[in-house]
Amino acid sequence: MIDHLTDDPLAVEVQASSSFNNCFISVTNLTKLISPRIASPRVVKRTDSFIRAHDLNLSEEDIQRVIDDERTDRETSERDGSTLVPIDGNGDIVINALVEIGLAEAGDESSRWIATSGTAYVLKKRPKQQRMGPWKNAASGKDVLVWSTKCIRNLGAEYPVVKARGVINASARDVVDLLRDSSKVTIYNKSSLGRKDKVVLTSNVDSEAKIMSSLTKPPIVRKPLECVTLFYARQLTAQDNIELDGVGYITVGRSVWENEDGRTGANSSTTRCEILLSVNLVREITTTSGQKVCELTIVTHAVSPAGIPLFIGKKAALTAADGYIKDIRAVFEK
Image 1: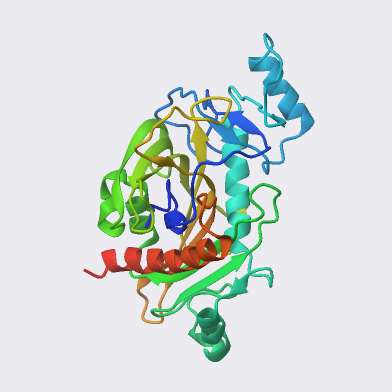
Image 2 (image 1 turned 180 degrees about the vertical axis):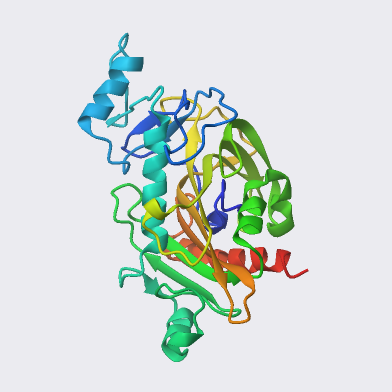
C-alpha cells in the first residue's frame, strides 16, 4: 500500500505518471504558505516545484498577477494545449485552496458518495445513537466505512475518488503526528520502501508544509512507484466550517513536478505516480466513558497506471482505503 500522504494509500494499484491538459502552478517561493489564521512559519525555503491548479479556482486577476511577477521575460508555456501558470510569493492561495477542497470532500455526507455494500449494510442496520461523532455517517467501533464517487472536477474524471472512515484509539494529535513523520511510514505501510522530506518549507507546532518523496513496491506492480508530493498539515479552527467534537487536523497532498512541463527525468528503475488529491481529516471524539479517541477520514483521487483497467483500479482503491484505516488503527493497538 502506498503511503497516503505522499503516495496515497489508495494508489497502491491506481497511480502512474500521466499527461493532462491542465494548469500547473510553480510553488517556487512559499513565503506566505501558511493561512493567516496560523502562526508565522519558523522555516521557509525555496523549491523549484510545480503543481496542478485546474481546480484551485484562481481568478484571472490572480493568474495574470503571477505571470507578470515571474514570467515577464517569456510567453506562457504550453504543454499538450494547456497553460502552465507559475507562482512566486503566492503559495498561500495554492495551499489554502487545497485545504478548502480537502475539507469539502472529506466533510461531504451527501448522496453523491456511493457506499460499498458492506458500508451500506452497516449504516442501515446500526442505531443512530451508536455513531460516535455528531456528524452524519460518523464511524463507530471497529467498522471501516468506505465510499466512492465521480470526480466533479474536470481533470481525472475517469478515475474514482475514494473516501474511508474509521475510529482510531488515539488522540487526534498522536495520529496526525504519526502521519507527518516520514521516518515512521514503514510502521503502518508494509509496501513502503521509505519516505523522505526533500524540502521543509514551513514548520511550527500546529502546521507543517514540505515537499516529500517516497518509494513503494506493492505486489501488483513490476517497478517501485515513486511519488513527489507537496504536503501540508495544520490544526483546524472554527473558521474552517467543518463539524468538530474537539480538536481536529487536516492534511492535504498533491503531486508536484520538477519543471514547468510537468515532466520528470528518465528513470527506468521506477514508475512516477500522480496524486491529484490526498486528504486526512482527523477529528477528536469522546466516548461514552469519557475517553478521547479520534476519527480518521481519508480521501484519495489518483491516476491509474497504464495497462490496468479502470474497474480493477477502482476495486483495488476501495480495498486499499479499508486497509489503510485498519493499518493506522493497528499502530495504536500494539
